[in-house]
Image: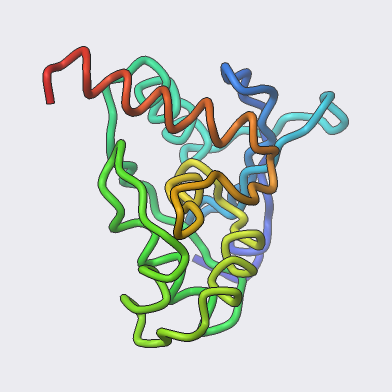
Length: 164
């Protein structure tokens, strides 16, 4: 694969229960997912975007709990550590910012964990919605707290219906 294959970006939209998503990928991996109000660019699909849409369909229908998509992180070493820790949070569960900070051996860096969550370019795939305040309060979500609440209730509802 040459450099042009890596730098060429493909885009598509996904109509989700929590709003329109813009998906971006190159020929190697998924690059970003963002909440958007309207379609403002032409779609250019590739295999990663098709696979992403399929896995999002499965997630929203309750058939998928873990995403297995190659992704490209665009962040600092610290942010990547946080995002990797987020991927380990079980479906339907929540942890605090402090717990993530402790998990990555930066026990006092819970505010920095919150900042890394806010810069997560792959919401849902990297489940930053599963991170809550230390007293169980829903705090901060780049897509809006109503989306965070919806995602958490969706996951808990799926688990309850399956008796888990």
